[in-house]
Structure formats: structure tokens, C-alpha cells
Image (cartoon, one colour):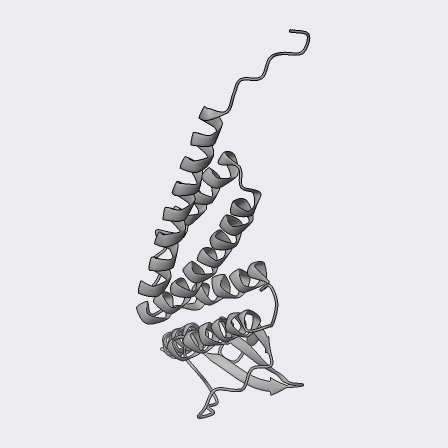
Length: 200
């Protein structure tokens, strides 16, 4: 009888340990250290945890808690990376587009709500538009039919990325100008006299 009681008690303890360990995997722990926020994630053990992410320059979530769940931590991390991308964009001079994309893609990997996913995606589209418009301006400055047609492609791709009303109108005007410029060059080339070949 004692043997069966021991087995039952052992099974109950094992069950409690498994449930507790599984629950701990959903726990996140925040520590502020040397100007950075360190987030640890619970392991599959009742008390174990491992480093999940380090966020330099971040401020701890408020209000502070001993334990956070995924629904609290992931939006917090998402906003951190969105803010980092915005900070890079505000730096004077030509923005570091690759750096901004890296931050925004990281933010998307933690965006577990539709609103946060939309916020990060809107910024990514904005960066892609900026890159395409920059490439279009470079192509336009070369003023050849080949480059102007490339500029048209860049501008149309930028237009497809959902710019706001003002930016959309600016892109439309630029597309119109490029098309007119191509027509002018083609007309000039069509009317140019054919030069004799050397030796004729």
C-alpha cells in the first residue's frame, strides 16, 4: 500500500513540476544594467532562465514587475526597435537605410498585434519609397533615355508603396515630367541628321 502511495505522490510531484516548468517558459524577467535593459526568458524548469535579449539605451517597462508575459514583453521590444529606426532616420545627412531596415525587420519579428505590425510595415514602406526616390533622382540627373526609363520604374514602384496624398502627388508630377523629358529626347533623336560613316 505504501508503495502505491509513494508512486502516486511521485506522479503528482512530477506532474506539478512539468506544469510549473512549462509555465516558466512563458515568463520573462527584466533587469536594468549598465545603461541597457536585459530580458531573460524562463527555461523548461521551475526556476531556470536564460538571457533572451539585450537592449542598449532602453528604459525598463513601467510599471516594473517581477515577471512579465509574452503579451507584455514583445510589444515593448517592438516599440524599442521602431524607436531605434526613427532615431537613425532623424540623423542629419543621408540616412543609413540598411540600419533602419534592420531595426524595423527586428521590430516585425516581435510584433504580435496587428497595430504594431502595421506601424512597422508603414515605416518599412516609407524607407523603401525614400530609397526608390533617391535612385530615381540619380537616374534623372543622367538625362538619358535608358536612365529616365529606369527612373520611371523606380517612381512607379514608389507610388505602389502607398504614399500619403502629398507625396503621391509629388511622385505623379515627377512621373509626368520624366515621360515628357523622354518624349523630348526621342523627338530630338528622331529628327537628328544621319551622319555619314567615316570614309564616305
